[in-house]
Image (cartoon, rainbow, N blue to C red; front, side, top):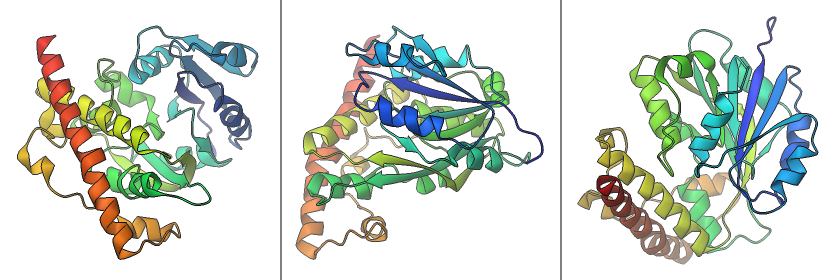
Length: 291
């Protein structure tokens, strides 16, 4: 890699006092030499601001409009990098994360890249973690559908200059909407296994329900904006079918479920994730139309 572009790392955070020390340590350990780090405090009420303002290597930004996409847009307005690298405050990027992400965009073939998201399980994972690991954050699969989540996403600046910013009105699915909008304009996305971040699994069914509701709500907002064709329509009867958890992914992570455990996983997935996601979609659709 002869030419080294400046990379702007952008992280939105809300009440991240527990996760920030580990994240900051991981960002400082990056092997890539040309970095700026922009962390956006999205109206935190804990000591997030105090932690960030004490970091001379971090550009602290405060964005009062609620929502991670509004926060990312605030950082994009100030970022100087030729490549924008996105992750979340509960992720732990590995030391080669930026280097490998930049390498994947070194040629002119791709302008967006989704890096690998490795899940961190507890010592004895239970039902909520089984569901989380089998249903969510499978970046390799996402990229085949022309998007990647912002827990691990690299984007050339030219993409934002050409198609605009994230949709700040969305509470979820803004990364999918942005990536697919980019692909519709001729930009291409690739998957890069070697650009890794670690992400904790959700430990409770309540946390999964909240996540599913949020995902569905964002999809409902998009459908109301006549962009539903770009994402799965959770308003349709088809969306109420039985889930198909990726148990092979769990086996790849050395988690082996018995048949009764798989059945329990599918039933809980349906009543906790599928229904919450679909009802969230209805709520997002109705709220957006009222607005």
